[in-house]
Amino acid sequence: MKKSSLPDPFEKARLESGLGKMNDQDDPVTMLLRHKDVRKTAHNWKTFQSGAEPGRIVVPSEVNIRDTRQIPFEVDPPEHKDYRAIVEPWFRRPLQPEYEAKLTEIITNSVNEAIKTGTLEVVNSFSLPLQSRALTLLLNTPFSESETWISWGTHVFRSEGEALDGDKANILYNYIEEQIEEAIKNPSENLYSKLLDSEFNGRKLNKEEVKGIMILTFAGGRDTVINTITNSIAYLAEHPESLKRLQKEPEIINNAVEELVRYFSPLTHMGRVVTEDTHVCEHAAKANTRVSLCWASANRDEKVFENPNEIILDRKVNPHVGFGFSHHNCLGATHARQIMRILLKTLSEKIQSIEILDYKENIENLDEFKRKVGYDSIQVKFNTKTV
Amino acid sequence: MAKITFITSDDEKITLEGTSGSVMALAVENNIKGIDGDCGGVCSCATCHVHVAPEDLAKTGKASEIETDMLELDDNTDEYSRLCCQLEISDAIDGIVLKVAK
Ligand code: HEM
Ligand code: HEM
Ligand code: FES
Image (cartoon, rainbow over the protein chains, first blue to last red):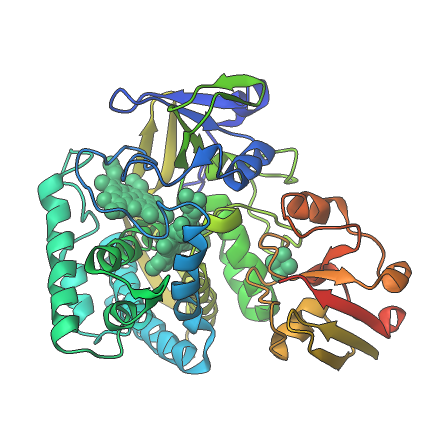
């Protein structure tokens, strides 16, 4: 087993029953493991709802630590569509040439810093700063804000050893409330101001809604991006031939990004609440229980992907669900894809090789399954190309 | 060289010329409304959904199984539906008309 591999813990259960069971704070979750079931269920919002009690579709459940509804994440159609319409154009800005140029500058600087330092811990000294700096572009806030976000560390929501920590989450909530007040006093061109000025069904978005959107932007785009960056560095360290290939064939970079997202599946699963007695995968699902859509398992489904446990950089047909499926698909995907495309290009141009010196895996505990999602820490040495 | 005509949801007709690559890439380069090509053509996003004009289906062929599985859940799908990232530009599809689904 290579250090950079992410094994698939779901294979046996996916083939046998298609389901996994997980207890979570006395509100058990039935995990759907097959690609087809995951897509079907994601699409069927009437029977499998997102707009339940705030925090309930997240696993582990957050009903005890927050009341703010995350938007558009915890809303179902038809309102969902109206909220998405407000935010979608903004979240497509990463495709604009000026945005791309600024993001390239941020990533180039991060890689140059890493080369200068030589040996470093990737999660805290590379991925977190890079993710935070890139987020200033998405929110259109001053670059200096990234320093605050970096100072929060990788775990904005929990203290050492604890799954959820309400006090710690308050740091983020308080910060966002302050930023909203600031934007009310001094409107600018940032996302807070843009949202405060947006129309929803003939009225302006209220503060609570703006807060719900902003929290989600911070929460959804943090660990996911950090893990994708870190895992990619580990992969390239053990596959120098891939680093060379990306430089020689930059036209495969887009396929490579999709394949890495498939293989890493940075978001393991996401819940839905069942609204009526029904069946999934020939098993009964009772009203007011929870199921989860296991993107990570669906992305290794042997019925859909050939050699599912291998990274095939130029995989051509790749109907992965790493960014979700149907109407709730990832709003931040354009930003995340741009980060990864530019990062792979920059690394392939500047880096000769990467050595893994030491690492500690981050294993997610899903009861029946233990899944490696990335690293708590990973020490590497970057070797630059000699000119 | 192939001429490809797109009809957008607001009934605008745009004819483009291409020599190689996918029809999705051609559409995105020319900002065809309703074709976003989010996944860059690997068949995972369905933001490149078009309806082929019935008389042109012989030129493009029907959707592959991966495409139909992807589109199966879309309300707007019919027998002329294709994901245009899976359509390669070549002389063989010269003159086709595609109605953008979104
Ligand atoms: C590689 C990085 C990322 C991955 C793998 C990822 C994955 C996902 C997945 C699987 C969903 C679907 C959840 C569901 O169906 O319930 C989702 C939704 C979402 N993601 Fe991401 N995400 C990533 C990056 C980001 C970033 C950078 C942001 C924003 C800064 C973001 C914001 C969101 C939002 C707002 C939603 C909810 C959309 C809705 O409900 O309509 N994500 N993401
Ligand atoms: C208010 C909103 C949210 C809160 C309070 C929250 C809370 C948390 C907490 C407490 C953890 C740490 C769990 C642990 O490691 O034990 C976590 C991790 C994570 N969250 Fe969220 N979350 C939120 C929204 C989201 C959304 C919308 C997404 C993606 C679409 C997301 C993706 C992730 C991922 C990928 C991890 C990393 C798991 C790991 O690396 O261990 N979160 N979140
Ligand atoms: S571009 Fe994503 S499916 Fe065609």
